[in-house]
Image (cartoon, rainbow, N blue to C red; front, side, top):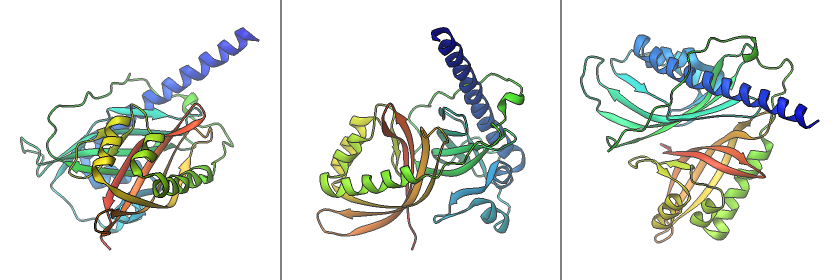
Length: 287
């Protein structure tokens, strides 16, 4: 039984590494495609039928891109610096820096930021993204190290197990509601401190990525604001160890009671028996 356990664990580990490699490779193909045919067409090629974009409202990305087909001379490029796959390999996450040039022949980029994308493997084994959100910030002081991948060809092992169920995200929706309740009771800084680790990151416009438990806690303490989240949806992997939520957020100033409305996306990963924030992105609502 012990050797059977080791053998099974080795297979699962190898399969997960294979799928992680395929996810990273897919992210590079996504970015390369944007340079070849333009950002809009590349997004149409890689988005799932139910994929979500923020414009700024959460919308069906495929429908939005189909209806808004104005050509752009700008060139968006990016690379992954972080990637995660679920234990069952049906859901994945990537993040990293992006930059934008007004024209493909320009020597320098004029806009910068970071992206967070959640991917779902389709029945044929292909990765399609189900939600994409990011922030903008000044030109980075230093470059993040891009992930590397092996140029492995796809095979039958990449296909999803026939009949693999699509699990409802009820657990994460309830967790988001609990998270919001906790911010009201113990404050944002203490709440984030309970749900972050050394690799957690939050993305806010005009800020570089805020990474790690202490950095996030310090940022929240300096903000002195109240957070009220209202989840609208999400997804969770069949192994219930990776998923995302998104929805509306009201941020209130503790000193003058003024408030601003945002949309948010939060990616969760299960660490032993507790959920940890992998990444969180906010953008202002333009109501």
